[in-house]
Length: 123
Image (cartoon, rainbow, N blue to C red; front, top):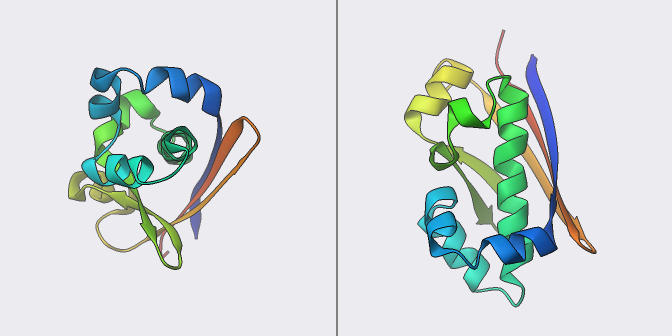
């Protein structure tokens, strides 16, 4: 059963300016996200897609980003595509523990990064 859907669009040029601040980067992104973005030729596009994923998750949850917090979720890049990771506390609040899935799709084109999140739980 789908319990939430969220999407977010993030300007890559805006993120390029934002990530000049180490304080912003360390407050918003996990070490894993930072390492991945910095290993790419255009880190800003990858920071923007991670940011959009966090916002899309907040929208799908219905709680909003200020309730969920940026540090509670992060994007893991795998060989089969991006995966939305969550702290145990956040997973428990959203999915009632381990019984559920979070589907994530990321893309970037031109100056924009887009994330789409679907939250699914067993009935």
